[in-house]
Length: 124
Image (cartoon, rainbow, N blue to C red):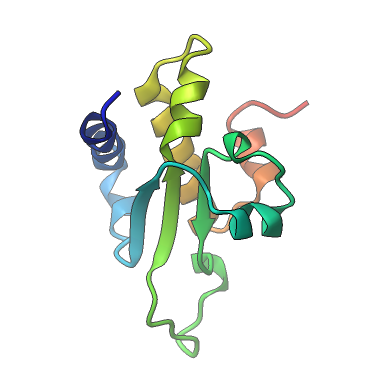
């Protein structure tokens, strides 16, 4: 899949987010990169760049205050090559992008991985 087509799939996933959530994401930038950098992987304790599909970087809105102000936008990173690799396992690229986008937006709204997995129906 070309980078342009991948970016269009990301835009499609973002457009599908309900307006009440989109309005709370004005300071969230979505970036597509091929892989996470080594520093990011090391900080997360992840050995292989293929194992990280997306990442939220910022302060969740549940922890933000009128007294704390950041000049930098919150960021959601989508890692294109790991997502494409995951799609080769019989899943549609647009579905994986959608799931990763929703998962990372969940972090923006203050949910941790365990809570998100429970909501996604993936908990044990």
